[in-house]
Structures are given as C-alpha cells and as structure tokens.
Length: 134
Image 1 (tube, rainbow, N blue to C red):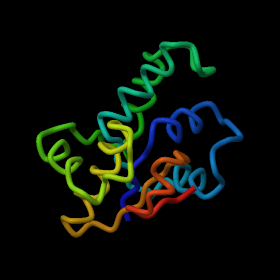
Image 2: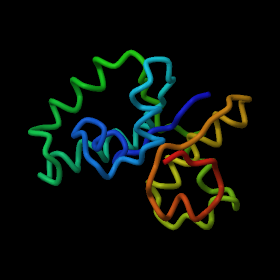
Image 3: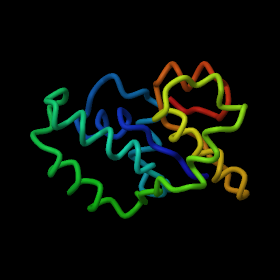
Image 4: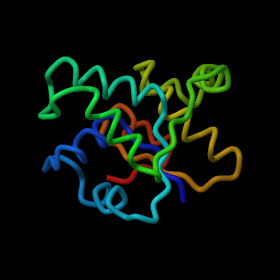
C-alpha cells in the first residue's frame, strides 16, 4: 500500500500535533509505510511553515525532515497530474491543489498501486473519489 500524504498530515506529524488522526499517525509512524508526497502538498507545507502557521521554525526544518525520511518520495507535478485534474470525477473537488493531490493518488491507483490518502481535508474526504485514512 502506498499512502499519499497531504500537507497538514506531514506538518502535524512533525509537530506531534493532536489534530493528526490516529490512523494517519499510525501509518506515518510505521517504518514499513511507503509514503508519497505530492510536490503540491510539499510546496503547500513549506508555504504554511513560512507564514508562521505552525510550530516548525522554518521551511528548512521541514525540507530537512522530508530529506531524512527514506520512506518519503516526492511525486512531481507534471502534465499527467494536471491532465488528471481536468477529468470529471474530480469535479466535486473545488480547490486546485486538492485536485492535484487526489490526482496523484488516482494516477498511482490507475497504475495498479494500492493507495490511500492521508488527509483530513473536508473537500477531499467528502468527495469520496479516493480512499482516505485518518
């Protein structure tokens, strides 16, 4: 199973924040988990940190933490992701970045990978487009 990590899941893990769902926390702490970080979510996490909305002192700390975790791979924002966001099954997700994160999970699934999203984002969870673990 591959887990696609949303920005808040990543930040809340690094902060040890109580808002991180128990199932997501279990996955994120499991040394055997395979974690996929969409480039969009990575950029959003850096933006959130740089705006002072977390207890993380800087985006450099976030970048270092991601680099240090061998389980994490950054998935590029490329034409395939952008094209996948335009398909009708993602119409229920109104926010562009959320669509890109879900598109990452869907592309992996379409390639035969078992996948779930680690997100608390209501826009994503209520869409029902992809399985969510929280």
